[in-house]
Figure 1: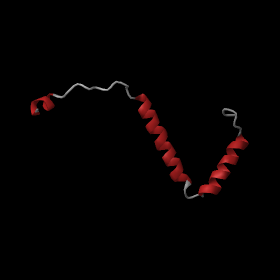
Figure 2 (figure 1 turned 60 degrees about the vertical axis):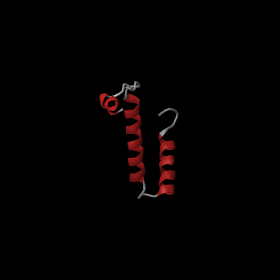
Figure 3 (figure 1 turned 90 degrees about the horizontal axis):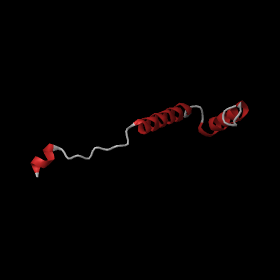
Length: 62
């Protein structure tokens, strides 16, 4: 049991998704979901500090 969802509930959800989107769209949906999770992990792993020091080149141009 995963967080209150059993195997039968997961199978029911899979069947509903299969009926709604069709078998051809499932790989696209899975790929999009995978990219979203990857981007979320990348965003949460980056440091929160932002370097705002001015570049030396920008001062020379002014």
